[in-house]
Image (cartoon, rainbow, N blue to C red; front, side, top):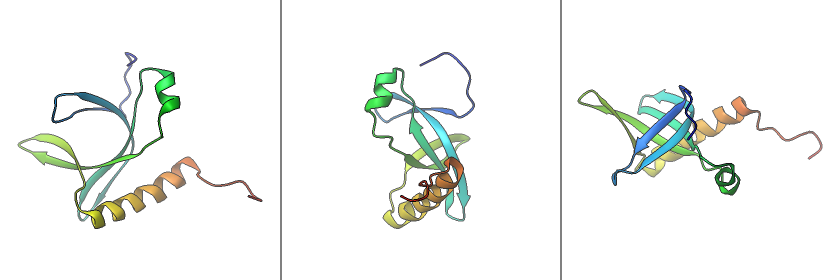
Amino acid sequence: MADYYDPDIVSVVDEEGKEHVFKELDRIETDGGKYVALTPVYDEPEEMLESDGELIILKVTEENGETYLSPIEDDAEFEEIGSIFEERLADLFGDEEPDGE
């Protein structure tokens, strides 16, 4: 990955010790908790072209002063949070079709 500072870049180490790098697109807080929407960051342009543009939604938890990102296990919670992010990101990134389509 390029050696530059971007406050929206998040490095996550999975259970197997492998590091994954993401760009944080948005974050929200609800009565149910805190959540982030991430997209993978790639080292090579070819990797970006081959990606499916997946959006990763994780729950933010804190334990003993450490911050953890974990998958949302509850389907209803995931659907609710996913819908919120979908609407917010569509507004943020202007996901509108041109007139006449």
